[in-house]
Image (cartoon, rainbow, N blue to C red; front, side, top):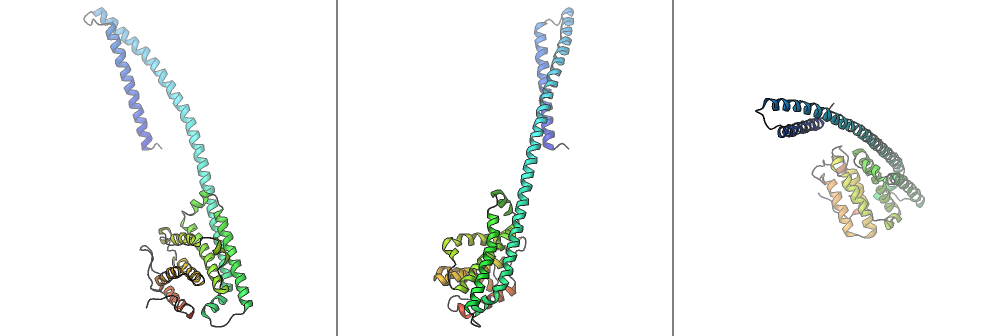
Length: 310
């Protein structure tokens, strides 16, 4: 089916061809008129008509041959161009399909590693809660076992993130344009930073990773992605990574005695406790999330460190 643009181009081409034919005919007729100037003499008129007929016959025969030749060249060139464009489109489509498949594969890897990391979290959660709430003392052996599971959980999800980050640039770009991949990416980092925070609670030391990397930049990137309009349109639970980042910042602030970082964490926690929204387009966190946040940050461990709204 011919598109409107193609139809316009064909019409313009026909108009140009008609104009050329008309101009050529006018020039030829003028040339004949200059050769036979006496229109009052019947003999001259007969000669002029004979020349005019011969001119039209010869001219249009030659012009038709030229037009056919030009059209033939155009068809050959067009056929070659079509083949080139078709091949280029096939290569481009194959490349895009391959990139989309690679992005899907990367997303699947992220999800698988994150789910396994979460299963490990469930195995050390009890010890973490006991230490946070100071209900019962924990033995060195229990802490050691919990730390081993935490490090395994972190290395697991870190492998998934590394596999994604090692993907070709175009694959990562395609992936991070899809809400499902953004979600998997954010959830993977959510698991990674939660394990770091848990390690700080249990070991009461800063993990070695925090001494080697600038975590603030990555945290900001993950926060922006989790609060983005792409995920907001998918009803992504933004409060999950939001609370993890607040939890991580608070534990790091305690160990580093960083008042500014503690204030940042406090502000984020208060957003959850008061059921506010960090951005206008985002929905409020569920009431249950607000209640859990208030309970978790009202424990004696944080007394004098953070202030919660009434």
